[in-house]
Length: 295
Ligand code: HEC
Image (cartoon, rainbow, N blue to C red; front, top):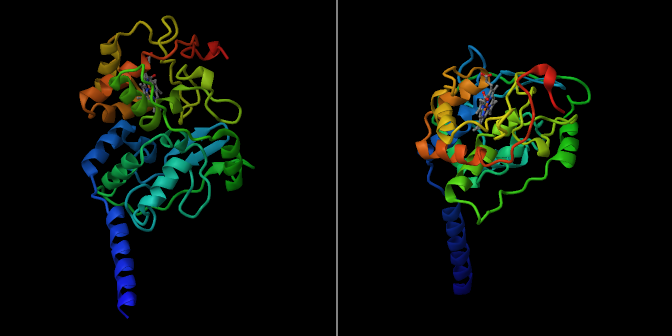
């Protein structure tokens, strides 16, 4: 009898410990910083729509995808999602029902985020107003409308790898790389894609005309002639803060929406992004002039 009780006692203790390990303290403040670095998750807010309630059309060569409701509404948003659900969605591209997401949702970048940052982001999103709005079905062509084609795409193109430490680089550069590559996903707009819609590794940040709204996102590698090689680091941090270009003009389109959030980051985060972007290998690629795309 005593051994019996002892056993149950042990089991109880183990359970208690396990639940204690899984309990975590929400940190929406840290999450807001991630949210800002991610450009306010702007693709999830439609023109004249309620913030983050989805429905924004994202044009791709395969058709139009509509972004989803990521407000904490339990029925139509992500209010019913567990921590594990969001981790799987962001880092593995798998929905809570087990289906695969299309890469228009940039999990290829978010897979490099730390679990802690994904969960803090969730904490922040869950402090925002819930909006009841059902997701709109995507308007894409066969076979891209089939979820299993997303699975096939992942098999070929999605090989998640964490960002490896580079001891030759500074802490600031490492932070900048993390923010740009994993969180802000600058490359989703600024890197051209191949025929399968995957980012071209050799053309990293070299400019693209296939941004989420079919707009031109210029070459931001430090190529002196076709990129931003003539910009100082201050020019770039100032742009990220205010949206003003070195020539005094203001940035437009999707970039201006993102800058509203980059501008709310602590200055050291913008400095870190600039440090990283200006350290990239220069790639010569004219994307400003649509007739002169060097691919
Ligand atoms: C959602 C798409 C998107 C994302 C994400 C994005 N950009 Fe942009 N970016 C654009 C577009 C579109 C333009 C062009 C705006 C214009 O023509 O006014 C632009 C312009 C720029 C420019 C101006 C280049 C020039 O020569 O005029 C810089 C620099 C830049 N982006 C840097 C970044 C960095 C750094 C990040 C990540 C921290 C980033 N962008 C993330 C879409 C994006």
